[in-house]
Amino acid sequence: MSLEVIEKIQRLKAQRNAVILAHNYQPGEIQDLADYVGDSLGLSIEAATTKADVIVFCGVKFMAETAAILSPDKTVLLPEIHAGCPMADMISAEELIKLKAEHPEALVVCYVNSTAEVKAESDYCCTSGNAVDLVASLPAGRKIIFVPDKNLGQFVAVRTGRDMVLWPGYCPTHVRITVEEVLATKEKHPDAVVMAHPECSMDICDVADELLSTGQMLKFARASDARTFIIATEVGIIHTLKKQNPDKEFYAASEKAVCPNMKKITLEKVLWSLEDMKYKITVDQEIASRAKASLDRMIEILPA
Ligand code: 13P
Ligand code: SF4
Image (cartoon, rainbow, N blue to C red):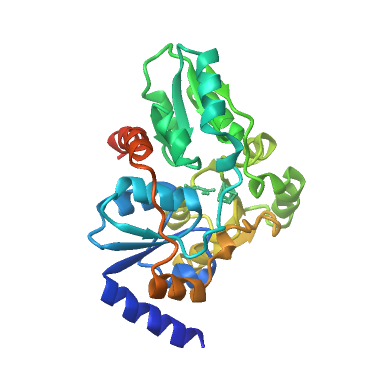
C-alpha cells in the first residue's frame, strides 16, 4: 500500500518539478521520502535556494510560511493545514508592538518559530542553531527583546551575557520532558552523552552535556566517539540518528516528547497535496517583505 503511494508521489513530484522538504521531527516514512531533511535553519536555506517550482513542506505552518517568504515565486504546499505550532501562536504582532513600545531602545530578535506578522515586527530572526551567534553579533550594550520562547531566550542570555527581555512562550512538547526522566535514563546508561534542545526547560539544560539544535545533534552524533546518547527533544529525530549511526545507541529522554502537529503529516496527505496542489501557503506581500528582511539578516550572519 505505502509502496504504491510512494510511487505515485514520486511520479507527481517529477511532473510538477516539486521538492519535498521535511523537518527532523517528521514521522520516519516522511523523512525517508524527503529530498531534504533538516532543522529550521537548514530548511530555510534549502527553501531559499531550491530550483524546484513547488515546495511540499512536511513540517508545521510557520516553516511553510518561512519558505513562502523566502521563495515568493514558488508554490509552497503544507500537506495538513492544521499542522500549527502552539509556541508560534503564543505571541501576536499586537503584543510585540506593545512590548516594543515599553522598550523603545531594544533590538527585537524573534525565533523562527513565530508567525509572519511577528517576524515582520522584528529586526532579526534566528533559529536554535544560530541564536547564540546572532545575539552575540548585535551591538554591545543594546538591550534585546527575544520572542516567543523563554527557554531558548534564557539559554541565549546565559551564553552571551546580554541584557534580554524574554516573552513567556514555550514549546508544550519540550516542557513535557522532565529532569527526573533525564536523570533516570542516565542512571540506566551512565556513559551516555545527554544532548538536549534549548527549547527544554532550564533544569534539563543544566544537566545536559550538549545543548544543540536538531541539525547540530545529528552532526554531533556522527562526529562523536561516544557510543550511547540520551536525546532530550522530540522523538522523531531518533529515526535519522539511528539511520546515520547504525553502530551507536540512542535513547529518548522521554517517550512523551511527541509533537502532535509534526505527526499530522502522513504519506497519503503528501500524495493528496501533490494531486490537488493543496494547501497553498501564501503571505500578504507587505508583511512578507518586512518578514523577509529579518530572515535575510539572519541568513547573512550564518555561522560557517
Ligand atoms: P530545530 O530543528 O531548528 O532545532 O527546531 C526545533 C523545533 O522545535 C522546530 O519546531
Ligand atoms: Fe512547535 Fe514544539 Fe512542535 Fe517544534 S516541537 S513545532 S516548537 S510545538
